[in-house]
Structure formats: C-alpha cells, structure tokens
Image 1 (cartoon, helix red, strand yellow):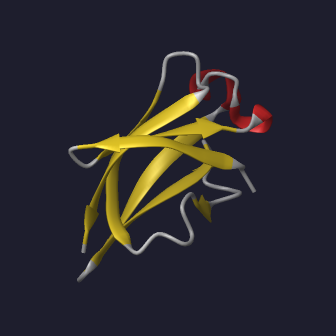
Image 2 (tube, one colour):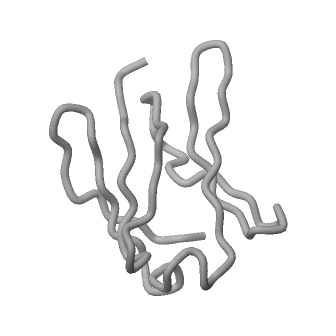
Image 3 (tube, helix red, strand yellow):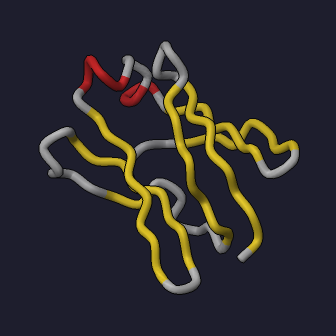
Length: 84
C-alpha cells in the first residue's frame, strides 16, 4: 500500500506527498489513477497501467474525492475533496 501524507487543503483542493515507492513519475512506473463513482460517493483508486494491483488511495475518506493528478515529478498528488 502506498504511504500518503496530507499536505493541505484550500477551497477543497488537496495535495498528498506520496511515499518513496510511488515517487517516480507515474508514466515511468506505469501507474494510473481512477475515480469510482457511485450514487453517493466518489473514490480515488490507483493501479498499475494494466489494471492489476488496484487499491483505494484514501481508504478512510468519507468525502467525495475526484480529479486526481500526479505532479510532474510523481512525488505529489493533487485532488479535489468535498463533503458528501
């Protein structure tokens, strides 16, 4: 599982610092981000480019989390989080 550290939030925009295993640029690692959309939830998932190894990025979040994007160096992740 990827270790994450919440860096901050302003106007619903959040950033995470990713642990060393995820610090290489996403394109080099073959990693993709996905949104899972349900009737009352939006969840962020990360997986290998071939779809294997999928897991929820913020398993304890009770918010609607979406629009994730890796920083150019792959060390951070920005996303939008709002109360559901």
